[in-house]
Image (cartoon, rainbow, N blue to C red; front, side, top):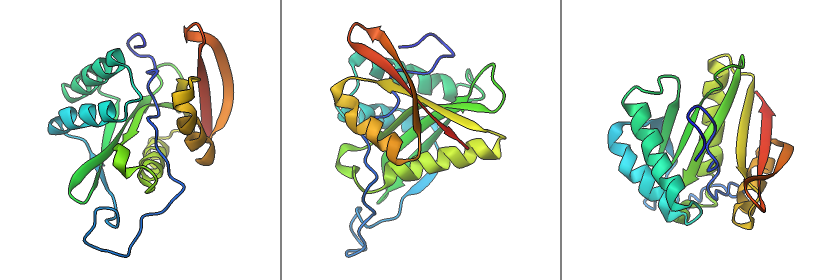
Length: 188
């Protein structure tokens, strides 16, 4: 995990947003419009389990996520925010974001994850758009996202590009040899 106050390596669980929710069966969770709300402490274990279920993140990253979410809900990170996305009465995703400490109007998306079986339904895109809007509402002008170059993050990187993000740079061997940091940005 990153040092305190730094973006996590784990932004961007595999989320796909190229398909819209189906509306054929209004009783199915696939057809239910997502409800995005501020997270509460009861969401912590669900969000951690959800991220773990993506099978993208390492055990230390999952531990770091749990610590991050607990710190936010304990008031130790007062500027950070967490949104929970519900679909069909069940938590289907979450996003953790906050302002950069020393930059005016710059925000970071630290985590975003969608339940594996909900991929491709537009939930990740809905969460990301809500994060962007909330950052704009707080005078945000730039949103940054950092992720890994490993093959298991390929869908993540494509998701950001489809969302209008620009790949700004790659820092070689940042996380470990052969695992580079890829930084994306979007003007809000």
